[in-house]
Length: 244
Image (cartoon, rainbow, N blue to C red; front, side, top):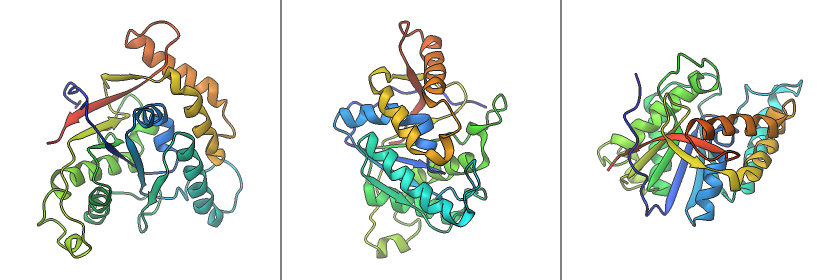
């Protein structure tokens, strides 16, 4: 299974909401693109489903990890110009499924922020890459976010309790998927790569063991080369679908 060919990106986006499972997901996959959006004047917010309590590569006490990763994500967001970061509660790291409760909580986030564009992880498993893009939490959030975009956030009869909280229906016009099979919308992020690297390094609990700069240049250089960009350029790639 694969996505259809991407639609042209909307030219008049004012607000974009990134919805991801863990602190650091958005920075590994999309920080360069988001930095570019901010440069263009787009207001970007993050909605992170967990605080990443199951992550890390050292012997830090488990009870300290959620607060640590919360702080890391807020620092990383600030590097690329994002200052609104929300975390959901009640969805433990490593156990996510596209439940009614998760759909409701993401739909509520969409109705609060009222974005033109939602950026999230692909809900399609990549059998060629059973690592990051196919993490069960990533797939679950991609599916739940898709359901929250359509029909949940726009349907006033879905989750009527949201109306009592003053959260009126909202139509997201476009959704961008990261990490899916065959992404064909390529974004040149060469000018933003230093901020992407700095954002990833802010996730010290996840990246202290890595040569972040080498990892970024290798991956993003390959994406750019495969897309036919000039030598030396760096890129991130997505699938873009219209949702109006």
